[in-house]
Amino acid sequence: MKRTATLYLLCGLPGSGKTTLARRLEKEAQALRLTPDEWMSPLYGASICDPNSLDRWNDAHDRVEKVQWQVAERALLLGVSVVLDFGVWAREEREEFRACAAALGARSELIFLDEPLAVLKERVKARNASPGHAGYPIGEVELEQWWGIFQRPTQDELIPRE
Image (cartoon, rainbow, N blue to C red):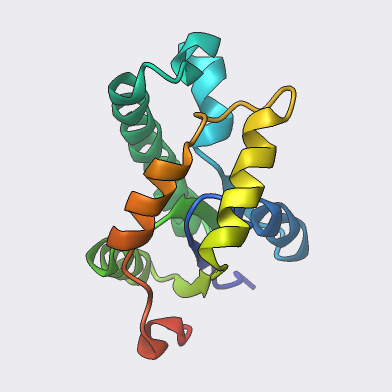
């Protein structure tokens, strides 16, 4: 009997714990985990993480997310659950992913990781200083700007969709 696949959409700002949760969910739900930051250096080289190349990083990150979504669509179609570690900051983006999942016959769950700005700043600072961190170094100013534009999910968005 074919199981119904689930799209787990992880929603939150950098430092909120998305990737940590994604790693746990991939095991618990036997799901394919797609984390864009982990693909960046292997595909574009370590220089993509240079703090002076934000435009280059953003362009490459968008490309990686597009390819990862194509992989996710195929997995969902095959009945494999997917953990999408994208952040999904805007309601419109979240709704689009969920509508696509439904069209593929998959259910979806939006999981919101909400942490105070001070906690995000501490975590991002620690991550930036971590040896081997493969992500773009995020500054406090950027994090504060993102805090202001991030669209927090409403309660109705947090209800799983069959």
